[in-house]
Length: 501
Image (cartoon, one colour):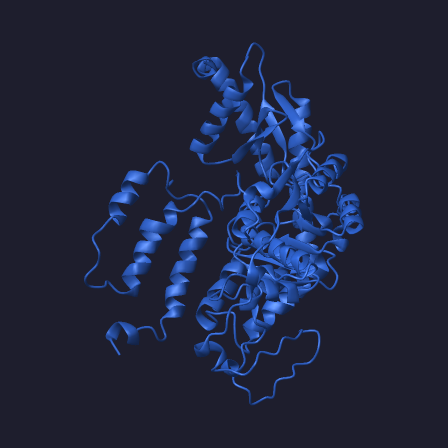
């Protein structure tokens, strides 16, 4: 054993204490800015390949002084551009524990047990009943898995195994024009073709129109195309709109179609009793996804897919046996954590894979994600998450109220969840899109309150989405104040004329 390897024992506590102190300091956001100081940290970090190591203590020094201070803006309380956030403290601790104590989610271990337990907790919290799930890296893969199950069921009903034998006819998926683009990518990966996704028109509130869906279904059937699935949004990423889930679920059942609900961002909104009625119908879905790395406060890398019949996932994504894996262990016992453990006390953790999540998705090697979700829910409970969701929804409502009240602001869409779409307006400005595009660039450069942009009714909107655990009403007020200040400055400077052309 080398001296470096020997140094791996007994070092974590002091190193983690130092790193933890540095991360706490980072979260005060008094550090230098990565954007404006990029020349400095790029120069310091861009070194030749090390031929001799510097040791763990020196690496931590460099992390604390040259890397962490120049991290992403995403964890800032004022960042509202992406529907992701910096991990909470307990999520960070749980992920660190898993990285050391259970680097794979497999085996008869407490970590494998918490994969299933936390999935059951999520299903219970969000009203999914007895649906079973599997974790993956995020909503992109979660949608892929759900639609893979839909493809499997459709073709099995016609006597064909699409996972083994491929497709023998064209099929179609029906989703609104506001649906996340990962649905098209999933269709491409699954061999259906990206053009198999039909973009169904939305109403003025960004919700899928059921009448337009019926017309598309009828047209495809006349053309000999086999309808496969309806994809509904429980909170679109553009505006937070919730499709008419109950009507869509009824239509799916009447026509024998798979009903998938993309709740990657918005599913936790069901905990806000003021809008819970909008989620009626999700309990009839064949598959649902949600991303704990959004509203729950995990770091990016955790999505969950729920289905009514997990055996469909197994048939869609199972691997061919590998002798070095299956040959070295007993046959996995696919069970549930709802009953007592059946394994004898003498069974070693590597004598059994535990629940074989590797056959329910596209990942073989995968981290223990369930322990992070378990820790998040243990820390704040459903009630704590409910309070967070309500707070963020209130923030979007507050921004909308301020936009309605100020002559230089315009509300473009009433918020449903924690997204509010608004813009700056001023007299005698012909190109308001150009004005708001310039305003957004300045917001990003200030690196304080940072929404994204989107298009609502053909108009460029500033689009804050409030999901961060460290984000509160102060950030909503500060954002509106910054928009007014920067918009006024642009008009005074005449900067808009330069971008109108």
